Length: 105
Length: 105
DNA sequence: CTGTATCCTGATTGATACTG
DNA sequence: CAGTATCAATCAGGATACAG
Image 1 (cartoon, rainbow over the protein chains, first blue to last red):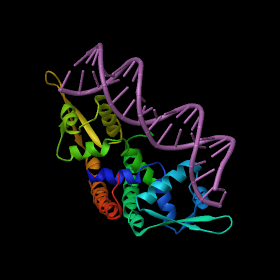
Image 2: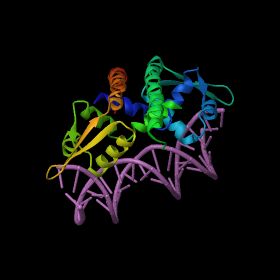
Image 3: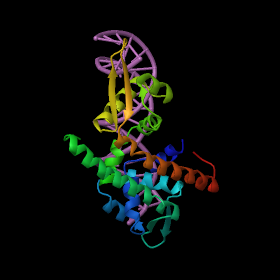
Image 4: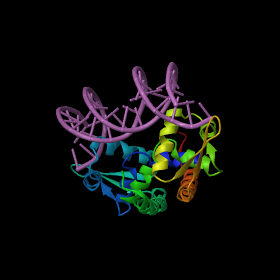
């Protein structure tokens, strides 16, 4: 089922957050590290690699001293934005729905 | 972030599949078990319970002998359909995108 | 600065047997 | 039929130290 392709690609606790971060423009490794609070270096590095393989982002090395690396969304990666919007809107509805009934989670 | 509310609620390897199954109409426990291939009884039972708490589905017991239980989507649960559609469409694009480049996954 | 390697822990899943 | 209990296996994620 194609749904699961999408889920796999966006899978991982942080991918959506990383994409959201990159929607504002290119970011360096350390910048993402700062913006995405709570992520560990290992996980960030792994998720970025996966996202690059899945063509969501592109990675460019700038050979300064020391080197810096810039990550940016591809057009394709940018096309995730509608999904985030839909999820976000639905999530807000969900809160109202739940609080109507009782308080949990 | 509201996105993660949505993700939490739809979280679990099977929820989307279960919802998709229920979009065709109410199903009994054993029917879902048959339709959703690969799921274990324990996991199905737990996910159904979570989904009930989150108001995605409703559970009704029919006191036949032996008893049967029917699960159906609430209106709210049905409102997940657009999300599934969007994810599905994006997932298809993804396949094309990936196969353009190389063959993996 | 941008990662990789290693080790560790808790959560998730599954198989199986059992209950009402 | 519709679950629950128990146990074993797997895995994602994190802390830390280290490398280019």
